[in-house]
Length: 464
Ligand SMILES: Nc1ncnc2c1ncn2[C@@H]1O[C@H](COP(=O)(O)OP(=O)(O)OP(=O)(O)O)[C@@H](O)[C@H]1O
Ligand SMILES: [Mg+2]
Image 1: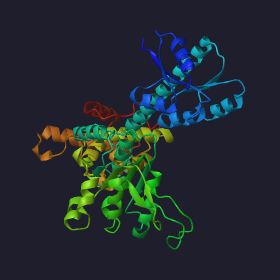
Image 2: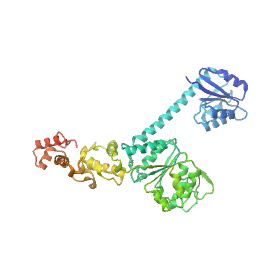
Image 3: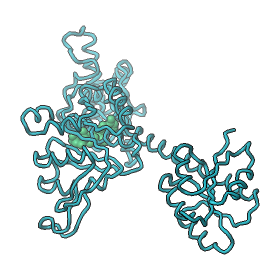
Image 4: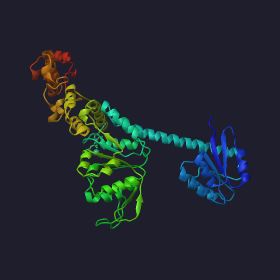
């Protein structure tokens, strides 16, 4: 078993000698320091599991020592040893975050119990932290669909750059998931417990963007009735997501560059330099390079924000994601609404796979939401899709390039689509569908079975 490191701080040599002999050397490694400064020096080289410190010491007393040790490591358990009569100070110490205190003279067994509790406590904290980041990681992955090979390279890159502090530039058409992936980068980074602040540069009027980013002093401009912190201050220690960075004005760009270079900025109306530590993720749906070429975006800033570049492919180039995304959206809807369809018919899916999705994942999300509202069965058929997606009955799986097919296959495709539409129109009532089509009910059943068209075996629209 690994020994625990216990660091004792006491200004008196005799006390230090005593500490060195106090604990079982099989279980603990006892280290002594003559004061807080010496302890800090030691901790730079070797971590301690618990610190035990005398409260009254000439140079820096135990209380101040506690603060200094916690400044370096807020979770380091510190046990204070007090002489009789200083209990108030010990209570104060507990309030300030000491793990526990012992009154002199103490029993070595008592000390050992306190130390063991402190060690267990610290382990729990660590375990808790690990679980919390694990939960954050799971939450971050749970909502992101990535089934297409084109996306696994993107996900790999994100997992690799997330833990670093590199600036990331994300490029992709509208609705490809730039927001989603910017958040993912934050959640996978060491800054995950800090804030994630997101701003859309194109949504904020040009003259306000500077004060939104950097904050302002009271009276800095008309309307600035109160001093305000900006997003750079708010995101300190965390991640700042600048969406539509290509829309930032040329006048503001040098100010952004400076804060990226040395973490320094001025609030609007202030001459005092402020400091911040942010990780920057930028996004744009415009070709930034051409903005640089046209002199609308500073080249030096472009290099700065572009340390790592991630191109999100449009949805039409990763159609493998479509079925998974559809299932994901339906599931999410079902969690909040009653009577949400649970699947998409093969015909409808074929339409979804063919469509070029100019609005990418967002458009798909809206189409599915809308379809699940209009559709009153358990399956979404093409009828429930928007007009531009509905197409013709020939658009069944494999119907692309119908003319190249043998007649038999083409007819099968046609019939499949025809019967799916028919059933949908008849509210999934087979008798009604048979009447509409001018077929005998048993003929229709045979057809449906032969083609593999799903139908309601009760023959009615029950349950929908
Ligand atoms: N891989 C994905 N898995 C699940 N949902 C996704 C995925 N990608 C995008 N979405 C969803 O699609 C919608 C659009 O995504 P997002 O807002 O991230 O796109 P964007 O690229 O930032 O768009 P814009 O350029 O318009 O700002 C969101 O509702 C998001 O939840
Ligand atoms: Mg966005």
